[in-house]
Amino acid sequence: MRIADLTSEFATDALERKLKGGGFPVQRADSSQIRIQAGWDEGQFAALQAILRLFLGTDWMFQYITRRVLQTAPYLGEREREYVALLALHAWRKGLEDEAESGAAAWLDPVLEAATPLLWREDRVHLDGLMRFRAREQLTRADEAVASMLEQFLADREYEEFVAMLRYMLDSQPESPQTLHVYCTDTKVWICDAAGNLVQDAEIRQAAEVASEGEAVDPEDLAMSILITRAPHVLVIHDTTTMAPWPSFVETLERVFLDRARRCPGCDNCRELRRMQAVQWLARTSNHASKQGPDGRRP
Image (cartoon, rainbow, N blue to C red):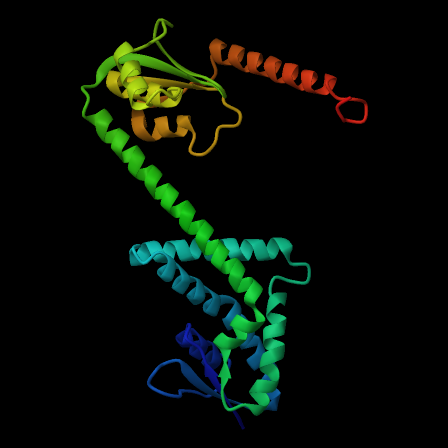
């Protein structure tokens, strides 16, 4: 019987379980918990390769990603790190599946090819070294997934804190019995009362202009300030946006005002706004096409 002495810094417990489940006699090689000795004969070699492929593509990669998250963002809590690692693992796998032509696990072929002669003739097989040397491209992609998901996670957390702050400010205001309507288009935001009169606040606008230090006042920030100050009992949202970025102003309104906010099911004003937006879009498209020649190039 051949003895495979497998060394890995990552997920050795998972490797041990997989080997035992495959019928291989297994024992720990030392007290450091990074070496596993598995006995096998020639007829079990294909099964051993299959277990190693599964282990390296799942458990090993997840523990590698988890370690990278810890190294990159040690300030996160344990549950937060695990969450980011799961997001990064999913993103890495998704990219792999989208690009793979010969199967999502084909990237492991060079790793197993390099491991085969070592399993037959070497006393110890360093799985970490094989992965870092033979799967460098995938580890780089995993690192990129970690960076991307961490950035997204921190942005989401910052947004949640921002919403919580706005909600606290709203709760600090005495609730008004009035109903306000906020209209959101791709280019403008404005507020009307129940009678359709435009709602403005000179003091808030002046404060916003001072805070912006001479730059243009953001209409969404101005509208949010007015709405929080007025603290309406009911906020009706008329949303005709077609390409709002995340997080959208409408979504933020709903997160801040909660059960006070309701979406307009479709009124005459919304229908007219959508009609005007469609006309403007057609005009821009026609104007752009008229400036180009028959071959799509500018004359």
